[in-house]
Image (tube, rainbow, N blue to C red; front, side, top):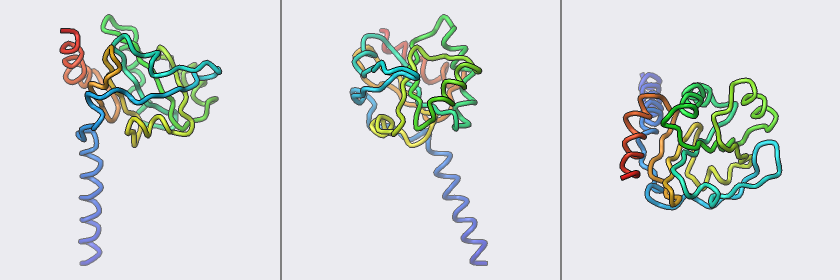
Length: 169
């Protein structure tokens, strides 16, 4: 009986942690995005947070080892080619450069820039604890929205687009 109770407890604990993760509000909402200086994938060119300021953008934290990133990839490709497109900056997180390059070559590249966070410092500064995570950034570099987990058409239409429309007013 104690084993059954323990199993039930751990099941409920795990379920609660997993299901509630995308509903956790970020303390970074309405604050400037963290400063960063990251190389672009496959080059020595550095991109900073200041390079993103000036237009509404998405920052998408992703990795080749991330099942949710694979799940959202087709949507990101569609979004990057749609009339609603805004720049999507991909930050490849704790991944192997060769694998990331190969994945984008084979699957398509939805990103306007692909940055590399090989040690994870920038992701930590953004409060990331799992991939994928996506941040909506306004023209001044302020984080307006954070989504944990794969993006989809439903999330885009119901959660992100309304925030973008509010920002454009």
